[in-house]
Length: 78
Image (tube, rainbow, N blue to C red; front, side, top):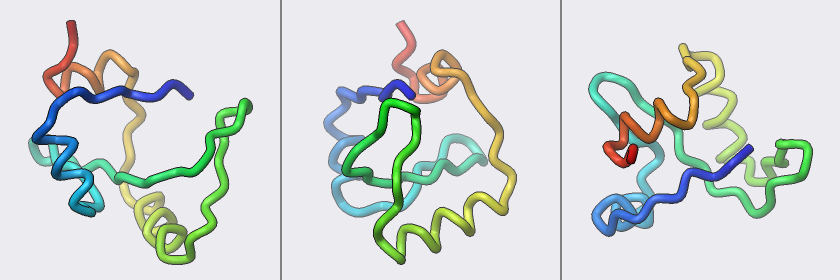
């Protein structure tokens, strides 16, 4: 799992304000803060509220996007 690094002050501010998801067009993407990402591309959710939100989101339609598609949607593809 490779991180998507964002260098956009407005977006950083909104994410830092505690928003739970970003919306691009009519699609929503869940935001979660993780303390550590393990070498096997997994992480442990330790906060009960975050776990509940994650499980709820996983029950909805969640298409898998490539890194390039995500960057293009965010308008940061070079």
